[in-house]
Amino acid sequence: MKMDVIVSLCKRRGFIFQSSEIYGGTGSCWDYGPLGVELKNNIKAAWWRDNVHLRPDMVGQDASILMHPSVWKASGHVDHFTDPMVDCKACQHRFRADKIDETPWVHFCPATKNNKFTIPAGEPCSHCGARRTLCPDCGAGELTPPRQFNLMFKTFMGPVEEDAAVAYLRPETAQGIFVNFDNVLQSMRLKLPFGVAQVGKAFRNEITPGNFIFRSREFEQMEIEFFVNPHDVVDGRPADEVWHDRWIEDRFGWYQRYGVRRENLQIREHDKGELAHYAKRTVDIEYHFPMGWSELEGIANRTDFDLKQHAQWSGKTLTYFDEERKTHVVPYVIEPSAGADRSVLAFLCDAYQEEEVRGEKRVVLRFHRDIAPVKIAVLPLLKKRADIVATGHELRTRLARRWVTVYDDTAAIGRLYRRQDEVGTRYCVTVDVKTVGDREKGETGDQKVTIRERDSMEQIRVPLADLDTVFGRLMGDAGWSEVAAAYPRAEA
Ligand code: GAP
Image (tube, rainbow, N blue to C red; front, side, top):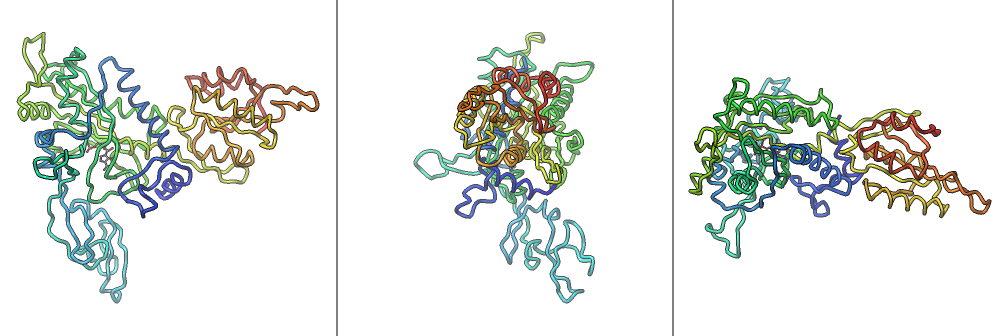
């Protein structure tokens, strides 16, 4: 599967557009179109329901993007949230020094009369054996020595642009949870272990954004800070280690629960040299994206680092009173941190399938029912018949009260089905002549419609009066074959 295929589908079918496209676009920011916003909202809603509403040990919050500048001093972002950057002295292109060997490079080979070649990342030239020493883009310029580049976006709070008014766009949502630790603890009378969840925008001035929505400068995170008493022991092991394992398992299973295939997911353990200075252990959940295995979510044991730092910088006490041991403790924190945009990309890539149906290519997004942007499409078989069209509109209005339902009569039925398959709509409902009958001939119609299921393309004939019950079951736990068994099959 190529990224280009996904990018083009996303633009063509209204999922994702390049930001400010009419002005030439920005490669680093993306806009979600009508179907994209539904898809992303569904992912965030499933995440929130499973991690906040369904758990007795979790609560949610929504902190502001602009925070006190000391937050970022305390967290270490002002001093350490940097990437090493190099510039080409000839073409002025910028690169991350630590990632430069992971990009293909341009080479003018002396062994072949200086012919130009683009050589795969990390490999030597097969003609002269040289390895890259110059700029990978132009192949001619020398690179500057690496300089540390801070990834936070700076702005000014209030009407003066001076150092005292500097504020940062948050580079992660996590710090909003740490600084509200005591507010949430006291107001909700929580007992350890408990977690706080937050979904929101984060901003990073990435040196090399790319791979569509995988790495952008404005993105959304779905983060959990799960606080654990470091003195607790579970099954003979420190509680923070046990909870870390539990969260890894839970989050790894979550993507699969919504349809991501097991073979496209893996766990990668950070080795000691890679660990952030505050982390006791970190694992990444990686997805097999079109450009290779890459991070979808990180799950870190951040110890008591953040709460201690904020206590020190703010002068406030950020502890928990352990009733049993009659002592104040600084909780350890397990942080499952997922990207909403990377999840959108993973769900899109995983759902995409091409198949041949009656000699024609069918593109289908096999989204899970909770993730699919549109649940039902109502399609009239004949748009010239006013009674069919009116029944279709009425039906759309009725179903849309409970499920995202669209109406479309802009093409012939075969083409309408293909369009809905391509955006992952689970069910199409067709209103036809038999449904409404023929008033001129005195026929009342059977008041039944055809429901077509996306994956099997099977069709059943169902009374209009049954639709709420049928879709209620299909959007709940009942499978298609179980529900379909009660109704006669309709011709495909
Ligand atoms: N609070 C921890 C934290 O922010 P991170 O690994 O830097 O950890 C967490 O980010 C998640 O946020 C990543 O796993 C990824 O899904 C997402 N993410 C990070 N940088 C991103 C970017 N530039 N574009 C899109 N998503 C990004």
